[in-house]
Length: 494
Image 1 (cartoon, rainbow, N blue to C red):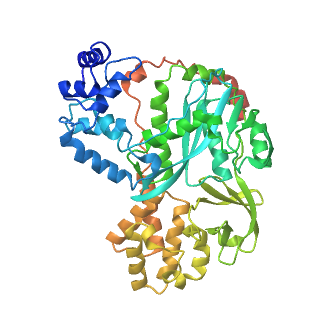
Image 2: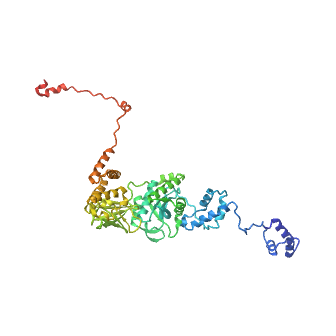
Image 3: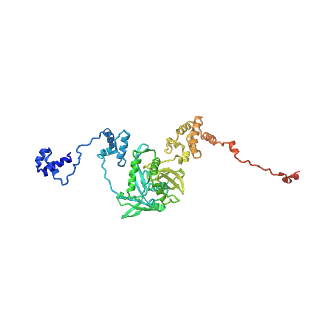
C-alpha cells in the first residue's frame, strides 16, 4: 500500500518538476496507471487499505470446524430456531475459545446475510396497549419432534410478555391464550392490536375497518377492551410482539425443550417468562395500570350438539370420546376447550376427556363400560375397551387366575374393577396384590381385604400431652342440690 509521503513525491515530480508519467514510473517503479490515478486526485487523501487476501484467524482457526458443524446442523432446523452469533460465541467459549466476540462475528458474516429493517421509535403509556400474535416453534414431545403454536401477548409500555403453547391455533386456543395471559397479568390492557386472524376477523372491509367474528366480540365485550388490526401483510404494525415472538423462539426453544406433554411445556414457559419479568423494572408498574379483571371468568369453550352412538361414543371433529353406556342413543352437548373435552347430558357432565390433537382417534374410559361388561363378561377377552396395559400388571394376572378357577372369573373381575368407584385406586390395587399372594380368588375376598385395609389406614388419634394439659385452665364443676327433687319421688322422698 502506498504511503502519503510517496503520494506527495509523485505529485511534486509531476506538478513542480514537470516530469512525465513515464519518467515518474521509471523512477518509482510504479505502474503508469497508478501514477495517473494519484495525479488526477482532486483532494489527495491517505490511501485506504483494501483487503485483497482473506485474513487469517489464528485464535479462531481451531474452532472453525465447530462453527461449520453448527451451521450445517442449522440447515436442517427450522429457520427461527437456528443459532445466533451470540449463541455460537457462547458455545465456543465453553469449548475453550479465548478470542473476542467480534472475531467470531467477522467470520460468521460470510455465512449469514441479514437485511435489517428500520422502525420508528414508539412510546406507550403503561397499561394502555398490548399486541397479540402467534409464532411457531419445535420441541421434543416424548422424544418426537413436534410443532407448537405459541400465543404471545406483549404489553408495549414495559415490553413484558407472557406466552402459552398449544397444538393448534383454533378458536379455543386463541381464547384460552387471552384468559391465561390476563389472569397472569392480573388485569386487562385498554387496547390490543391483532393481525387479521380468522379467529378474530370475518372480513376485511378496507382501511382499518373489520367485520369481526361474533365469538371474538363476546371476548372483547367480556373484558371491556378495544381491538385494533394491522394492515394486511404489514407485520411491522405490531413489531413489538413480532420481536417478542422471535425472542421466545430463540431464548426458550434453542435447543429444543424435551417434555412429555403440552402441560409440562407450558410450565417450563411460565418459569422462563417469570425469570425475564423479574428483571423488567417497569413490569409491576404496568400490571398495576391495567384494567381490573372481571369477577367471572370468560367461557372460551366451543359447544356442539351430538348423539351417542351404539358403541357409547360421541364424535367431536374427527375423533371419538366415550360416555357411560346408559346414554346410548341420547342427544348430548360437547364442550371443548383447548385441552379438554367434556360431554354434558341435560346440563350434567357425564364424561371428561383430555382433548385428542390428532385425527381419527378414540378416547375410551373403561369405567364407562363396566355395567355392560357385567352383562357380557365373556366379551372381556376381545373388546377394545379393556386394555390390560392401562392397569397395573397385577390386574391381568389376577383376571387370568380367576378364569382358571371359575367360569364366572371375568364377571368377578369386572365387579372388582367397579370397586375403584368407591375406594382409593391405590388401596384396590393393594387389595388385589394381597389376594393374589394369599390365593384368594373372588370379589368377596378382595372386598374383605379392602375393608381391612381401610380400617388400618384410619389415622391414629394421638393423646394430648401432659404439657398441653397443663395449659388448659381448670374447670370447677358445682354439684347441684338434688334433695329438692325428692318430693317428686314415690313416698315423698322418704
